[in-house]
Image (cartoon, rainbow, N blue to C red):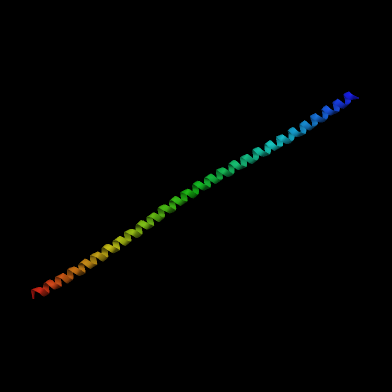
Amino acid sequence: MKTKFYILLAAAVLALGACTKQEADQAANDAAAAADEAAAAASEAADATAEAAGEAADAAVAAASDATAAAADATADAAQATADKAAEVAEEAEAKAEEAKQ
């Protein structure tokens, strides 16, 4: 009777061990699949970050280019205004010189 009990006990332990191993294998497979998904998500996030950085750099270059063009326009306008004022002063000086000759 004791022998049958020990045989049944050993069989039960082995059966429980098999169930536990199968569950552990399934859990390991699930964990590996989740790790693969996390790695894929991290790779996609890194790609998106690199793309966003490239777009930000392009926007910065465009903004700098626009600012440079605006500064060049302002400089040209100031130079034109200075030239116009110099011509006006020259005309006034010429008129006063003519007046002084008479």
